Image 1 (cartoon, one colour):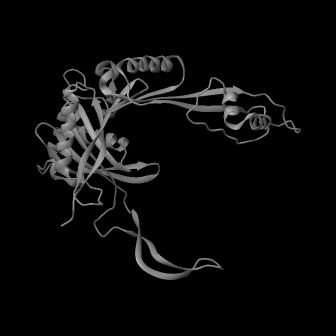
Image 2: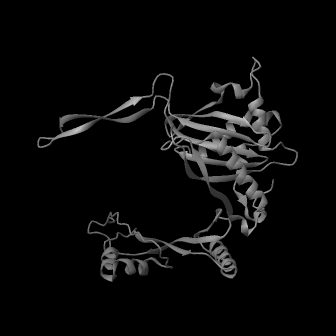
Image 3: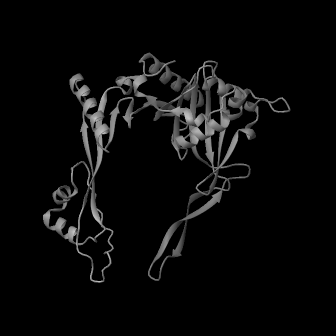
Length: 347
């Protein structure tokens, strides 16, 4: 019997904004699954009709919902990402001798690519989602990004939304949590403050003998530092001699840009936590710096609270990637209950 194991995954949260009188997102999901075709079959019984085709940067992909369940108090489903005509690289542990160059003979394993068996496709990513009222929870794995989850759910409920008088795009109101509604405690204890900024300083130098600007592609990278002007930061990293040499190599239309990052880590006292919030908001309001406040259950970035938390999930087969369907449903409902109890979200 294959041994099961437990693996932690990050649970992401979004809230779906709805106007007064509009059905909830959960209602739209349920209506979509109950919609019947001409033969009287509900969408939940028509797997081929739950396949969405999409062209992503010139690559044809398919996003489909496989298992889906109405839990009475929520709607829960599993999404898969597949690529038609996809091939998988395989290593066979049979060996052969090959000549790799004029000098090299080697014994290697047989490496080849093969398509999936007939009527099968390789899964490139999976996601699990749960809608409760206007709250959406999901976990994503491998190549199935949040963008695909959102795109698929909009596609899924589009007809149901139009039949209920919802004219807006679902994706347009799948949003992060508003700070003003969630409060500063929404992300839990602050663990990390990150400030990323950019400082620029133009440097005028003579043109080349032919009168044309010199072409260069020199870049200076810095981490965990921040400066109001670029050159002092460059000098601190490279030393004055190298900084001067870099300066003299630039053309008339070139200038040095130094990017830096400041971090404050560790558990906070209530006093320092409040002061950090004030500083972070002032920096974000008065400069072009990107301020991110990391918390136990999420982060605040660019004014929005992004709620998330990690939960353990059962993997039925040790070494596998698919999760136990019932266990994921239970765990996502626990996250919902916890967020409501902690007043991070509204029921």
